[in-house]
Image (tube, rainbow, N blue to C red; front, side, top):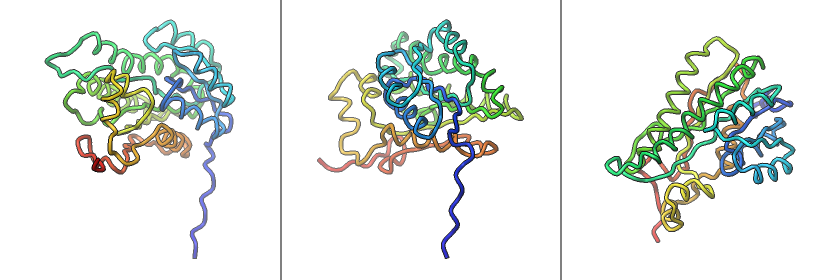
Length: 258
């Protein structure tokens, strides 16, 4: 006897407004595309407005130029929104692989400002609208780097640990209010820019993924974002870690022999 099929989630899309930061490429762009397909009205926010505009036109969303490191830019985003139901804090990145002994503090500053302070700026600015929605969602795009440290990753792991504790703290502070706080922590995800921005070398970028059978791609993470924000609103997915099957842990990755 077959099991009865589950009814569709009552929270799927239905015109809810989702703001996705860092939406010009990678996970952000894939998330914007997926949420639009799910029926959300999507506001795509990032610095590279040319890319945003092309994607927004294709998926029927709205492009807004945003620099999360600039408070006036964040304020302008908030002022231009009448309603926000979902905020996907995706803007971020890694910019070096230096050990602590050789730390480039300018890189550390940039990493912290984009990943942590930028996330705080946007969350603080949009929280009144999320509360007013009566069923708001804040999604933090964390990383397994926010749960486990590794050599050569100190600036990024420190920043993502900051994002992790930011999500935990906000959830405590908003308990009892109609706003969910959820964190997604991806492991190895192959996108067109993330590792290249970090290593500044195409050869080193290729080496990261060499021999790894089916690393995650941006669409896989977008699928997870869609799932957490379309659960019934009494269900809060505090933390969801997602890795490719080939990656059991930060240092444990199966690679095919060359």
